[in-house]
Image 1 (cartoon, rainbow over the protein chains, first blue to last red):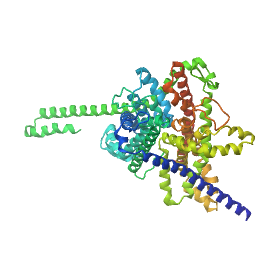
Image 2 (image 1 turned 180 degrees about the vertical axis):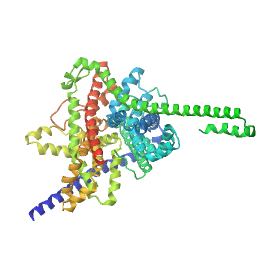
Image 3 (image 1 turned 90 degrees about the vertical axis):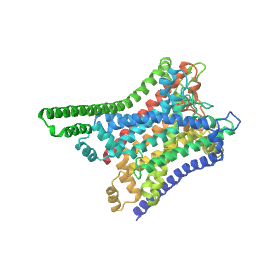
Image 4 (image 1 turned 30 degrees about the horizontal axis):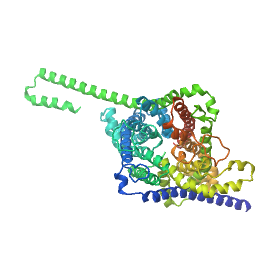
Length: 280
Length: 345
């Protein structure tokens, strides 16, 4: 009886602790989102989307930062996606069991969680330093390097899900290998491939560290890719650490914008892959 | 193959005139046409294969490039300071004397604080999700945690600076200081004025940030346990806790540790969440409440302002050290997760 009681006791203690952990963990996360919305919405106004980042002590918006983020993200994704998709295609379609695939998979998984600031240092030494100045394009390249591992991973995973019998059917009809990949495998895995790109966009749109010393920042409107370019995360970083109330408010609002964008992208990706879990 | 069609139609059009020479000529042109098309297809096939293979190799080159460029960039600092760089606490841009000890110490300490908090809580959340949570809530909470794992770290940083640090400064830290003031070891651990920002705050922010990673990976790993194993344990009367302790955890140990290492890799390399609240002080202090610095925070704060090649080079060497540390942690994590995947397959 006492053994029974102690087992029951241990069980209820453990389950209670798990409940406490869950409530504790989730409430911190809820608290962060709560204060983000509370502080961010206060600063939300049309001016945020129509005016440039202000000098200290005056009102303004985040237009140039938003535009800079969009431009660099788009270029980064445009460079990184084809590269990642081709590499993922090789791993799933051609060299499924080859040594190269195993090595690339391992390295790619490490790049996936490597510190992004190191990527920034890398781009600084190979692009910014030789060019002699910070530039929007080097920021975009840094983001592209972060896009690649995400896309490689999802492309490989999604192509591996395409049933082999579909490829065999196409091959039996005499379709060459490249056609089988492009017309059958890609088409079957389309939703998954788009999911990968969306996840990659979500991943890079909030990245700050690799932009700090590649694109730097720019207080004014700039469409010149060879000049320093503003981006939302870097502006948030700079404004949040400043002593000026207006800047801090803009930082909160910018943080809210990024979070909403990232959440929207992840939810869209999730809806696309409809019920399928691909969280790792 | 479609392009063969026209020639055949021509053949039919020729119709009645079917004379042997013409037919031979025609079939020859069909063969020529066909070999040309096949050659083109074979070429496209080969090119596509080579292009995808090259792309896969580029991924390797990127990693190689990162390592080579970091080593190249940090060469001047390596020559100037040698191995002493790793143990020296000096960080003086004016006299150009640099050492990484304070930054490495800060990186390790904040990551350890983060893991001490996030691992038990993360495992608790994962257990809650797989065993205790009402079925209707499982998916929504699971999805919410996965979404939170994707929120940019700068959000955690700004929240830490404006909300958490002031709160800790006014409520938690004074209490810690007075509570542990008389206990020998802890009095140094929690000594000094409550700055708000510092190692403890940075560690705590990191904990909140890696919590969703650890929780969602552990949950995925827990779900690889075959239901039959758990049902067998329940069948002989084991409690929920006993099933977790003696069936699920032993079965998934490698994967859980891999997930933790992955979280540790994130924590070690995290920049923005830490930079806001670490205080950027290049000194090793016994107190967790004191401001410090981490490798990534140092680079983020000082890189653009670094004047002189040696200063820049020292910062790049810091980056190299960080990369090497995280590389091994992540490699170990991936190896362990790979093993659990093979087990479940």
